[in-house]
Image (cartoon, rainbow, N blue to C red; front, side, top):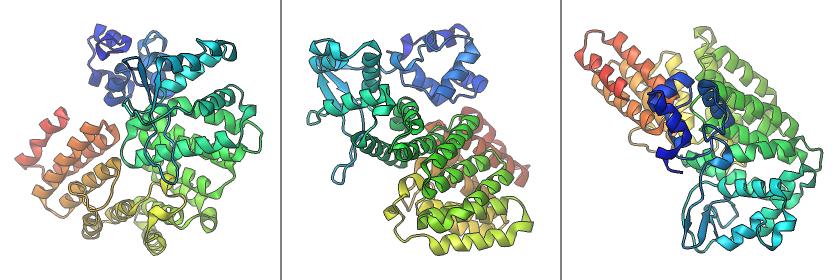
Length: 454
């Protein structure tokens, strides 16, 4: 479906609303609205906010999953990105390319008609369009046996088996890889379809329940990572991650889920609640991987520092523990993907802690180990933007106005380009700090127009 023909755009324009205006009115990011009008699947929370604002159903706005993301056809071939499968030797997406006849068979339109009722056909179609990116990959093939197995399990969770769980574990692993490579569009396309299926399996009493719950917890943690449009939604995803981590009965995913929930509280400027969640994770640290231990200690250091000068010694102690235990090769940690903590995150949290302890020189030294404008380490885009914003604030605290302005411009531009309202709001806070630091400087006042454009 073309963006110009999308029902959401038609309704929005009938009210003379720009995408930015609708974003401001609903709390759904401009990037998410644009993606919806281009036919991408939305998270249920974003879909609900748009429906409430317009007082229309998801169907009327063209937001139902089966209405989104029309499949491209060229020369009798369907380009259908169904899943990302990861093996020891293959870490790239497996893009499915099938002929019209194969798709018709899968959908029950030929000899397979008796094997698929209408609900199953609808489920297969959603699976076919719930992939991540349109491309041509002639060498790829469709694993019809696995697709049929998934349809049966998703239709009846009691039929879950080892091959299905293994496939879904590979799928979630591949989505984490894409997220860590800043390819969040891939994940945003697929999670709204797969998350409800994973939660259904997590509630199904079976020998695979703990593993299914582990996957559901990972899915919700990942949703909180990639959906930067709404802090309330991010907090809700994190809470769901904690609940399913408890069902999984694995201390590693439990600690990761509590870490994610604490992070959301820090984003929401509630350090006392963040500290509470990190403290809840402390009893787990002796049973979790070294990288997760270090990440919990980093969170405790930052939360204690943000809670005030009375906690300075606690902040310094946990920062020391985090450094001492941080693995030399964090990517080798078994829980690396969903811990979301490379060496760049270590230096970011060092700087955050020093900033709240009013030690800007130490903060700058930590940030210089990474640098947001010219990254020295592999850094996810969201982390890079956060580092740039913090560099702008730190340079201002050091009294370097020109350097602070340079980083501030880079941060606000990157946040606007990626559609990250959280980091744009953070850049706005930094702008306020610059105005306090240099109230009469024309160079600082001129940034107001740049902020409006961004």
